[in-house]
Image (tube, rainbow, N blue to C red):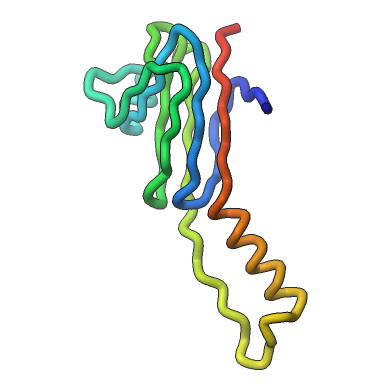
Length: 123
């Protein structure tokens, strides 16, 4: 598992799932304004079970912060940019078995099955 510290921006595809693993903490999805202030009284999403899965269900920006006082200010926050996966159609003169369309299909498959696991650690 890859540990990520002081992560600022990650780009993922729509329908990706992100996982947060943590101890004695919580994860909050918040607005941009709350992200910049490092606090939220009404988060969009809240979890404190130590092993949170979150599905990125739309294109755009998702803002996450730690729910423990002081952690966000020390860098336990991140922005995830979700990209809209555009359907790839080969030109009319290109067959489906050509190398370039095969790589496009592989990209679409890889993007739909991606999962990112983030481990937050207080240093």
